[in-house]
View 1 (tube, rainbow, N blue to C red):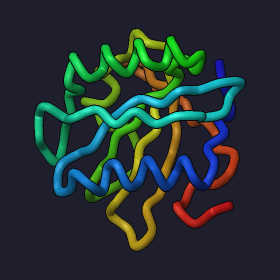
View 2: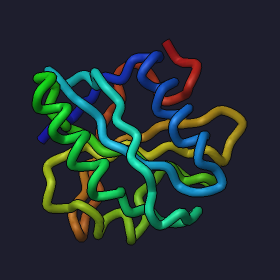
View 3: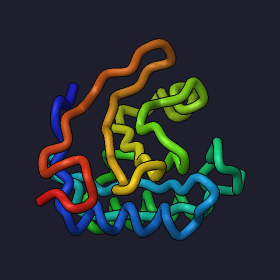
Length: 140
């Protein structure tokens, strides 16, 4: 089980920009991960278009999975936002994609500075994953 994921300041900025662009709704997407570091961001439309839940557009998700595979940067994480915070998995989050062995990155947009937190999820448990590189948008 992964204990740490590396997210650079540049990648954090891309994630925050993607979820901020769809406010007031939750934004979502997947992340290419190579050797424990996030290397690419694939925003996926939220077909729920809601501020409290998300469902990734299936066609866009399939294209992202194929693109990541072709680029040699496999998908290893999923991200979504909580527009009003907090950056902690909801009950609905825990029921989403629990069969995948991906890290879940949640972006809290409810504060002055966006905050990211990462987790491993099962239907019944939440396991924190450290983000190397910082949790806030301006961290180096």
